[in-house]
Amino acid sequence: MNSDSSASAPSTSSAARRAEILATAAQVFADQGYNATTVRRIADAAGMLAGSLYYHFDSKESMLDEILSAFLDELWAGYDTVLAAGLGPRETIEALVTESFRQIDRHGPAVAIYQKESRHLSVQPRFGYLADSQARFENAWLRTLERGVTEKVFRGDLDVRLVYRFVRDTVWVAASWYRPDGTHSPEEIARQYLSMVLEGITPRT
Image (spheres, rainbow, N blue to C red):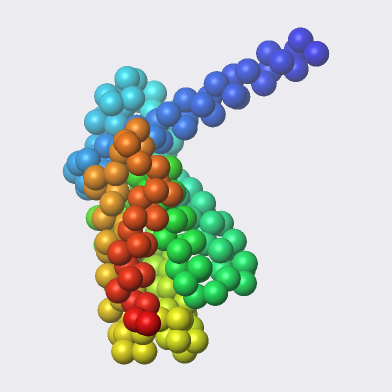
């Protein structure tokens, strides 16, 4: 029993340190931009020597890959749950927006990186999944909006692609000002946001 415990301790400690480094790197990438960030800058922010950082990661590209893939994996786990729930169009939009704000709360720096860097990163083979995710994202939102128009839940004169772009940009830009320790929870922000958006796309009675 004692030998098993002592053997597992370094692994647990290493995993925790690795997670701390990734969190630090995500914030540095978000603040300074990926291209402007050096491994030395990340190491300084993490309170370690640059050489020591290579014990955990072989490059800053590897760190960025893990940061973005972890964010998108969790985002799609939430989105897929919503999309498989059999909700109506309005309820689906409400749930997708709420899940989006939750992801901003959990992965704020990764969201900021994704917004700033995904366009040029997605042409690199290692980050090809960014373009695939964007296509899935757009398809999910457009299908939901189109279903809402067809079922007369949303206004018939809507340009669904324009609405999608508006919702996408106004939701995700919140990563630039949202603070996890702020006054409002992600669910409360989503509720207030939805009260404005849904008023504009729902038919007047």
